[in-house]
Image (cartoon, rainbow, N blue to C red; front, top):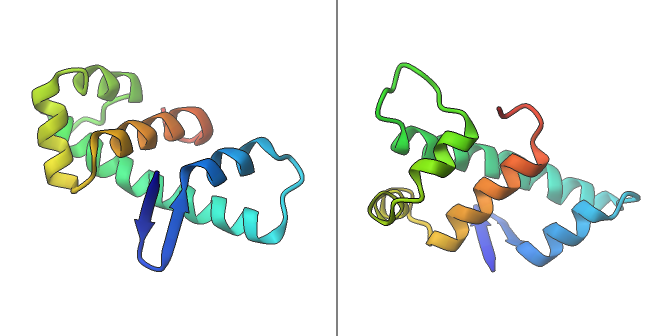
Length: 102
């Protein structure tokens, strides 16, 4: 699956391989850093669209729970202009690899 952010085109297979590789080359580090920024920004948008109380942030498990509803998932996908697979991949990546997201 491909995710696009401006001039970056991210292949999910490459990202997963780079995450598992502990001795990354310069390009892999740069790609992972760019994707982490992209994933975090996308996650924030998804969280904000799912969250009924805008004044309180939701934990990532609550966001996942809210997206189990097919209607909410379709609504969020249309608002962020992503497919359901892309939304689920972003949330899984953020939960697994971004330590500063609760």
